[in-house]
Image (cartoon, rainbow, N blue to C red; front, side, top):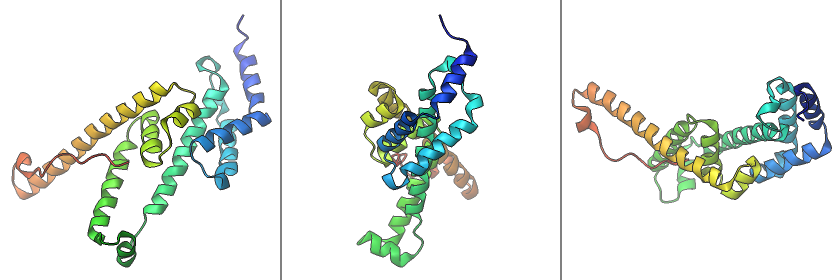
Length: 204
């Protein structure tokens, strides 16, 4: 016999204050490559977010651990995205030369712009798709760790990544085609003539 929803919610709420729940969140974040120095603070942020958003928890959609896991995955993705933006802000041409060695500053800037465009396209995808792609292809988190942290089958994680790649490639093709069309109109030539080559590879 299934207990009343009110009792389920009360039990789920109590679980948020258990020591094992905090340890579980920390393990999830470790699997998602959050550095140990930031793991405790981010764990607290995950639990605080769960408490403030508990009104949205629906026991009929799954256990509270699965709902909490989604919050942890979301916050870990935002953490990594902020870290990536901090690493990629290089504006001094001299610094660009030092970082790139024989690569020219222009080539480095073009590569940075390509990465920015690819990431912006990826982030337009549904969260469960974009986060898998960013975590695996950008942050080199293993697919097994991603699946384990999300409590999903490994095959599902791979399926989401494949869908993300195909969706991002199509979105990037549409965006490039639209940009080329605008450039063509500005120059007074056909959009087909303005196209310069194949769609670049997605770089997360």
